[in-house]
Length: 227
Image 1 (cartoon, rainbow, N blue to C red):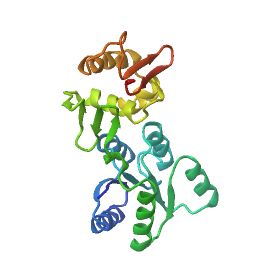
Image 2: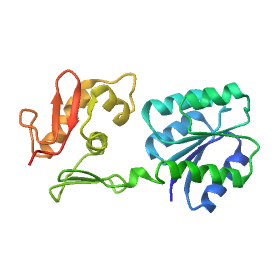
Image 3: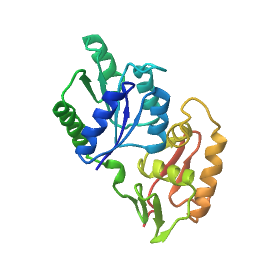
């Protein structure tokens, strides 16, 4: 089962799409506005988004840009706009597929299955392991050397963000975008404070790192300790 957010202003289409998803065994959340859909995506972290472009409060193409600024969630655009230029522009802006209205339930089901298959069905639910650190994104639990880590929601999100990119240097701006949903603002001091708390709970210090290594002037790299 995948979690899906449907952003569509037409109530009848929204209900019909939700029924198709339910029949496929998926959990659907829907919104009739762009801002309501963005909130559902940020808070719910779905496996897939179905996005209409003709929304009452904000054009769907603008919402797509906002989604891409904070998430890599697959997006299928469902719209009446069939012009080639619009299709190309939307796909280039980050959509994973484009379905023109009117469409059949069979077509919609096939597109959903294809996109979920390409991304591995529910990738966010796989365990993330780095050395003796283990994170379960679905249960939102983490353990180190077999012992549970008591983390706040933001500490957990920060650790997961770094662990999913283990070995890479993640900048504070990237952490603000992914964890705090502030791609264009926010204080890097917030990141520093949460990193300090996270280090303490993992039993290490910035001066004596084990997993969380500072790359000065760039960001943080999470790696397993050397044997």
